[in-house]
Image: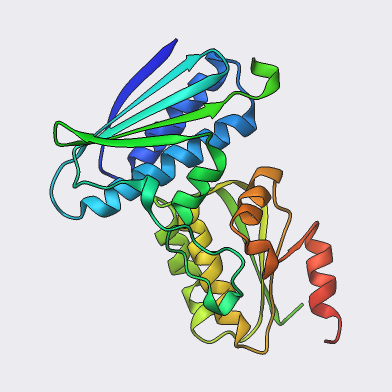
Length: 139
Length: 107
């Protein structure tokens, strides 16, 4: 089973992601927690694409979600400038308040809520593939 | 209580809605002149864009004589706080009453 949709590099599209996932929740009978985590992963990655894209005009973003075996695979592509989120530095979350910054926090959340990801650049596109294991009750 | 402002957060706090929220709290952050409570009771979702505002709020209050506390987080919202390490410097109460009690108590 898979789902494919395309969005623009605009923050209003976060609503589109939320709406697609709300439908998937019913169709694939997923838990609220799982959908919320999927939403966070896509939200952070798409927000990054929008931010890194700057004012370079329209960036085409596609999202494919594949439910197979015990996991959902997310394939996210974008036509923005090269950006590999798998090699960004990990923020030190043990720092005291005065020293904390928010840099890298979004990607940190993506890593924590997913179960492996890989990046490649091809055809002038960033292609990010993530895996998220389904909770026990969905297997 | 006269010296406490309570913000009720509702819905989704992400990079789409964060700028509006940031605007609303900015007056409190410039020169805090009262305690501040963020009541998360009706907040369904938070992303790093929302966490950034929470961090800036905590920083602004750290150097003020007033307190900033939060309460009533849904489990998955609290999990995002914990994974980000924010629970080590932000007070999270179970209920609004608990928050108000702490702020009333002489420190």
